[in-house]
Image (cartoon, rainbow, N blue to C red):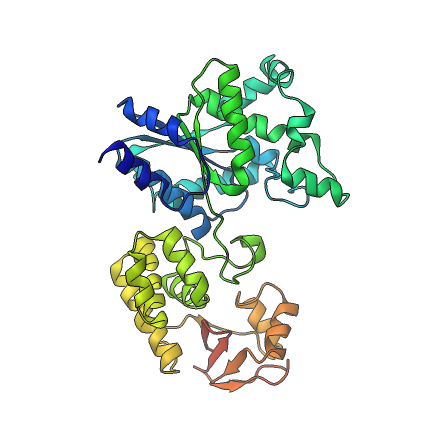
Length: 386
């Protein structure tokens, strides 16, 4: 590829590139660039929203550059304020390390593990905080610069508190870039302030500043908020094939176009020329195949068509043995099909629960024959056994 072709390849679908001239200069040097992506292990699983920026990191790998995945075991204990309207709960270190164990396995569903270096930022941030470096850095960053953040402005206007730890967060993330001598840092659009702080700290330390590249935040399957486990609108990279396929099929036609643009390299003219239902099935198949393999994707499509198009029960269903005489809501909760008994009752009231195809009218003690099929929502089927 020419330099222009490389830049077009690397910045497809990106929002901010600060700056393309700097990126061109780094690519023209011919050296292997260090591309940094940080992620704080605040939950145990990654979702499709994370895969947007992971896929961008993979593009750099495909051009021969070094990917550094920074696991924020230090910064997760601080709490990233980006895009938040309230202070993020601080996690205990034991939970952070537990979550971190799952991150690399899931990230390697997108990244090439042979070309990825995994680092924990406590390696350099622990001595940074305990030594004189933090004090020296604080002298070079003004309060006015920090309070320019849009998320901080909004929280102050709404009267919501901002902790001093949150104020320091961008300095810690920027110090990651200094420690790694990063050439490029990637992130979502809500990370642009943090990425630019990294550029400034590198300048302060006599380094060539990194290029900051951001990608859009993927909207969740509800079509409203950004994809997040806390909003319940996510498609997890570890979701079972049938669940992943079914969740993607539930999105709107408009959102489907956005998913194609952000999650695939498909020809958009061809996608828009297809019937929306077939285009959506193709998208669900592409993404399910990426994380589970082609055979699992084909099986998930067949299952979807059997259950939703032909209105039949799936061939394979997990078995569940309810407690004798238990209320229907208690059975749904015990089976893990609802996060609480109250939410299980809400599903019943919404008409989203069926026993052998008959809609449950009320939350009553469950009476069933061995082998009966309990359907919760559109995608959850249980074979009840005594």
